[in-house]
Length: 468
Image (cartoon, rainbow, N blue to C red):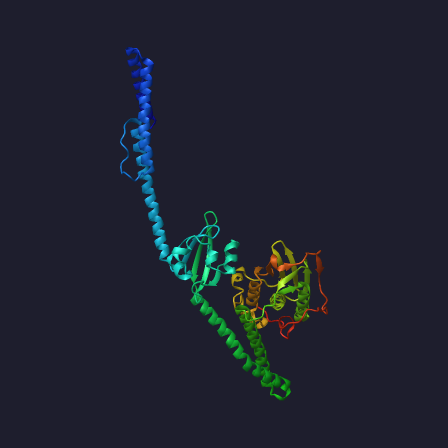
């Protein structure tokens, strides 16, 4: 290109030099030089006009304008660049069409929006699942088409670690699972999956557990009643029957505990249990649980201490919170050796409130931690006869925390004890944080005005999830 430019410059200078020489020969050097410059300027203007018309409509002709010299090379190079760009554009368009075709073949709905939620594109499945109409909905805000406060909060939160389940706005009988991903300049890709079948199966499972639990309660109550009668008259029974009656009574009590926990868990899951959302003073709740934990410890004489570092109130359901907290504390009692230490701490920071239950008990192999909150999962099934748990305690804790926008953090190692931490969001703490107050080694006889619940003070306070 540099050589071509130098060649054209030499040609121009040669032509002007010829005009000057001819002007000297004719006696009009300046006039002929100016005439040559005007001629070159006129020719340049003509070529510029050709370029202007060509660039305005580059597809008007498959070939560039005809010219010679510098302008001819310029037209040819621009034409080559235009052809190259067109091939690149066609290649990119082919790739985009292929992506759209493959996306349209998906059974999951895919919607593309900008950072504000303006819909830019969707596939065929999204049109069917969400009821979008190309003639009216393109360019609309997706929050105006999916009119759900939960969806709007989920879209604006920019926290998409967990999916959101909602009914389809166009077909309410369809249950959709929404998952949003960020890309580009905070643009969103929304994937909607039809999980109606899974939702129905889960609902059937919950209904089955709830119905069976209720149906089993009546005959089990009758059996327990007769067993209690036999125990009251054990002196009249033959010695070989006394042990059998005692064993049956123990197993009947475990069955009652299992059914009670199943019903409680089922109600929490499906929302049948009334959710009383009000402000709760955490200190008396924990004091009462510590009192019951000392009673459960009995002759084992565990060193149980409570430390309250924040006195703001927690918004939520007191019964559910008491059930979750007591399950964690009673677990610590059952899996900590005699005279072991159990520390219960309530604290708060900028992220929210935190309840920590820490012990120096037998600990848990980290391989089991991800599954501890599953129903009936036991890290060591051989120990359940000693602990008498139902295997549902931590499942109840998990669902209570979900109802309160919280999460459970479990830290443990074999032989090093365990720590269970309940995290609650900051917006559930109400009031001003006072100075730190420590309450350690509460007296065994200490009481609280907080109401007693079956989870905290029933005749079986040891109904909790075995975790060892």
